[in-house]
Amino acid sequence: MDKKELRKKIKEISLTDEYITYSDKEITKKVLALKEFKEAKVIFTFVGMGNEPDTKEIIEEALLQGKKVAVPKCLTDSLMEVYEISSLDDLKEGMYGILEPREGLRKVKKAEVDFGLIPCVTCDKFGNRLGHGKGYYDRYLEDAKFFTCLVCRAKIMSDKVPVDENDVKLDIVITD
Image: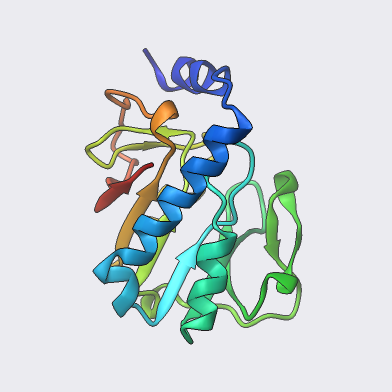
């Protein structure tokens, strides 16, 4: 199965509200328990939407712990930059309907990041991810030095994700 077919297959999977709530809680608990998360001073994370895990509790907990939280913002069809937020109120709807940092926030350099929480449409247990196909995260992560944590609901994981030379394998996969 190629990437386009797999994306379509995964997007057709229906998840119950009960499962989503359970999954969000389990993923949040596991991420917050990670040694790499606990030790990080600067967290890079997405803000979940659709079938992606809800990361708001992780963001709030990181901020409560005094960590800096960096969230991506899509600037063009191929460019993503990362900005520091100090609360969820710093987010507004941006490209693709995704919650992104509002204007006027501090840009975070990739070298500042200690821990990255990365989304996917689906992934496999080996750390290979399938995104939405624009390549934002692969471009951002290609020379990243920080620990990467891929989060995915168990019911939308795949046995094997097709990869090519531009795809970046991540350090760990967390699921419910």
